[in-house]
Image 1 (cartoon, rainbow, N blue to C red):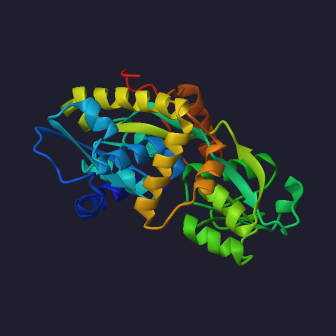
Image 2 (image 1 turned 180 degrees about the vertical axis):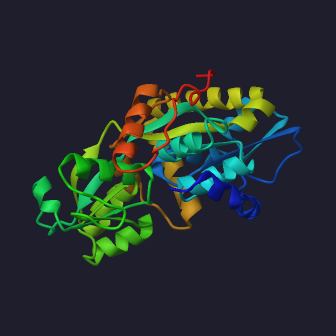
Length: 332
């Protein structure tokens, strides 16, 4: 997993990249504003609140802008993976971000609890192990000697996969063992899966649905109650912009309730946001399929995070874990 030193070493690069990305993905030309709040998110269905926030900004009626006030500008920054979002947070290039729980835990532990706080939940579920239809695996024993991809070494799904295989008696190492767990970027997973070079993929929506709909994959197991996405803040932002952060968290909770009350409208905004970010038309059927596996919630519990730490430690990550008493903001 990325070390804190490594994160800080790349902070300048992250800041420069963000400056460029911001010119491409800012909600609209920045109005005169006394204050700015910079928010990270991923172009994934599991980051629906972030996608809707960015998309409504593009349309000129930003959900969060309307609730933060006329003198506040919200800037939205897309990321492809948790470590890069954490680099930007540590660099002070963004104030808050939607992210998976394991990257957040990694930064919390490696910074001795000084750099990050979990503000609210965002999504649960949406993660699954998808197998090739012709893989011939019908029991845990069938995974011996197989090749299983995960999105990134040490990310939430990678840890879940390694912990599951270990619990079923397999020896899994970073490079081998009784089966291979191979960190692979999501787009590459799809092509390798289609080519038959992977037996399965442990990933998250919308890639679970893409593997099913586009490559004929079969879901072997789902993580229906997994903590998939949380909203975090940098400690620096909490100290310097406490009122803005509090208003953003309140607006996030309101948006989460709206998503659950208006699923059709929410899905269309997410689909439009994904299409804008990926520069390709995302089908409504793909988003609808992904939606069935997700639960959008603003709640989060310390107990769930403690279980994640135990899973990570069981497979060799987060060895120097510290108490999580400072991880959760008192604003919750």
